[in-house]
Image (cartoon, rainbow, N blue to C red; front, side, top):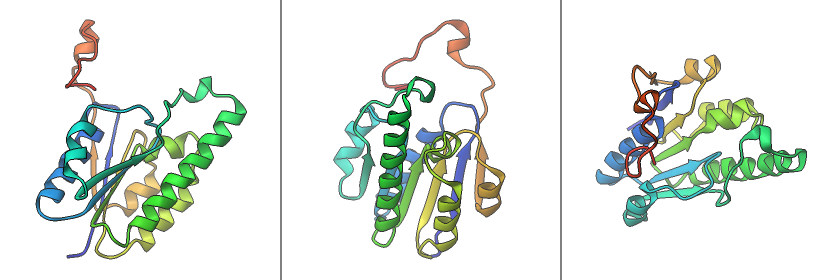
Length: 173
């Protein structure tokens, strides 16, 4: 089976959740899945479940809490570029022995200048033929959209935060 390229983008809630659901489906069918998370440092509750799926579904990320870009010093931005490149290289190196790789929030890494989009384009163009590749994040560049087989734009229509309901454990985080 030839692997395809998926993009989940837009300003709505659920891009990572959708990618995780796809990863669980893939792992459940015997595929080996790696999710590499960019710009997400702290632990998330979904990791509690995904950890139980190892080695079929694994998450790899920088374990520090990420600041908003506008709060980072120039040194922290440089360090974030280095971490991002390390994560990306890990994904590329793992692509030979995984069936699906999810690059979660790769669009944020591109938008914030932590990784050159040309590297992502080259990875898509040269990925192993079996690899299912999933990219998430707001503001997917047209160049990536043009290379993808599936593109879903998730946009908010209504959200509880609009009514003052704050993020709830197990739902939003």
